[in-house]
Image (cartoon, rainbow, N blue to C red; front, top):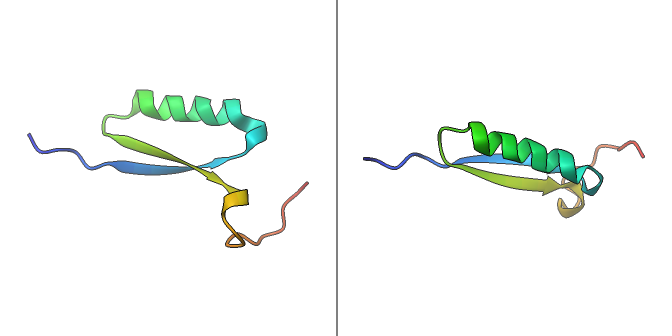
Length: 56
């Protein structure tokens, strides 16, 4: 049986919304029928790549 491709899902992460991130991640893992890798994306780690003004 051939292995299934890994689907990488990049999810925005905000420390203020930790519960929301984990809830969304849990839902993806439960519902997925293929292997999934979840990658949290924190704006603080983008090093100037994302330059749009943000609301406070």
